[in-house]
Image 1 (cartoon, rainbow, N blue to C red):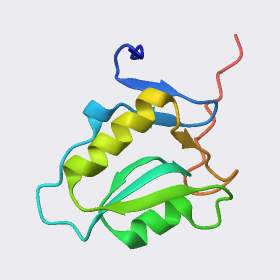
Image 2 (cartoon, rainbow, N blue to C red):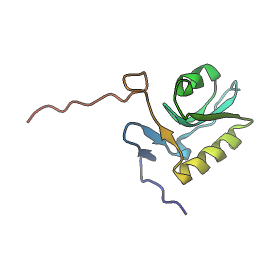
Image 3 (spheres, one colour):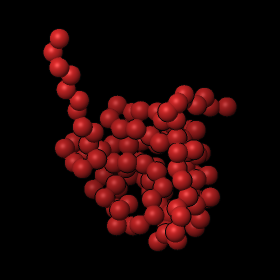
Image 4 (spheres, rainbow, N blue to C red):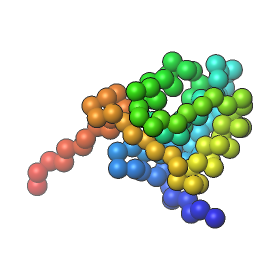
Length: 106
């Protein structure tokens, strides 16, 4: 069995956070679809293609697809999470690039 990271239920890559499957919530209203992003600027389950496109288009090697149900998307996300296949690779300087924290000098 794969070990899971401790709270706050996320593991971090060098540049971005990979959400733990338990942090992904089913939508409260009917979505356009269930778009699963395995490799992209951000990873997770998204509900509108126009939003999903921002995470995956122009990303070399992006892996994403549409699932029929949230449960199917979550099962596939969980399997990818457990295998270590999720990879968030934000474009430098792009909208998903993590902000750099500047620590004051002592």
